[in-house]
Amino acid sequence: MPRNWSCNVALAVGMVAVLASSTLADEPSASFKQGNPQWMSVGPLGFGPDGILFVGDPRGAALIAIDTGDRAPATEKRPLEVNDLTSKLAAMMGTRPQQIMIHDLAVHPLSGNVYLSVSRGRGPEAIPALVRLTADGAVEELPLDNLRFARVELPNPPDPNTVERGQALRNESITDIAYADGRVFVAGLSNEEFSSRLIAIPFPFSEDFDGAAIEIYHGAHGRFETRSPIRTFVPYPIADQLHLLAAYTCTPLVKVPVSELKAGAHVRGTTIAELGNRNRPLDMITYTKDGKDFLLLANSNRGVMRIPVEGAAEASGITEPVEGTRGLQYETIEELKGVVQLDKLDEHRAVILVQDDTGAMNVKTIELP
Image (cartoon, rainbow, N blue to C red; front, side, top):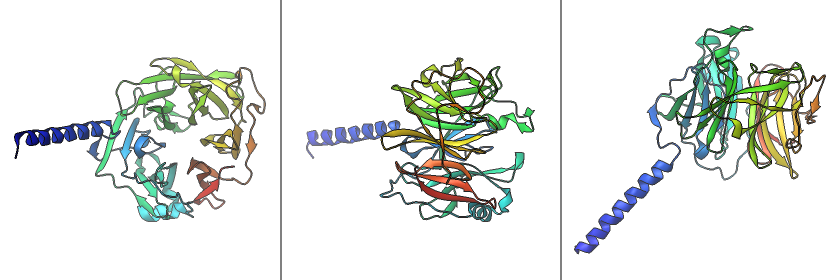
């Protein structure tokens, strides 16, 4: 073998190795370890780059990123319909339907498979599980013993023994999560003076991340508040600047510029709508239809609201007491009743989790209104 040919082969092999190493380092899951994430609970879910699933562990005050291995893009995302999901989950997990709690639903952006965070049992002894619904309606629990994952701990969570109004505040250390612009945004409570906060965690995970205390004006209560946590939020660009649109209990809708979420900051969000008292926001998505952007917000007592958000940029903010509603207007989607969770399947459809009159949970696919 001529010497120069051998050198060329060695050089080529070396270049392939370097390229492979570089490609691996660029993969979002390159730094993941393999094993059991050992979470104490499962709550909010959200997808990031390359189909990485982010799972909030409120009781453990931690955020876990999981490589589900579910990367194959669907040639066509089929509508999903699963009736009496609670009974199916109970049968799979060896318990009664009354012992099943579904915390969140997220649609995989590539495969269209639906992921659920679920608990078997209630209270501190509840057993957490992650469940996948495939396009053909199959229900399967993800085994935890050999997952590829990364974990980051949240600083200064509420004390696990602190209880207010019968609720352990640690369970609200994470109330919602979303990925955007290379970061995972985490809403919830801390044990600091201003207990409602937003954290921006770079992904791949870094121990150096920003957390800001959030203050809002609550028109229905007629005061500024710092202790009420965000219940659900979505990233949304306003005037070419990334914001978070966030909904709180009773139901102020607030915009928060992401650029202000810096370590130790105290941020005052702008309340752009008061959507009605005695209500708890449950989940929200944004979408575009007929050239206009909308927010679709599911609520505990006020149904599903469709809110045009083109006025969010000009909204100056509510800073005085409100009776009823004010700010951005909404339309109640009357045919959508009992919706407790929702996520986009594609640009025209959403998957919803619906509780019917019997208490059963059903999964349906709808056209975005």
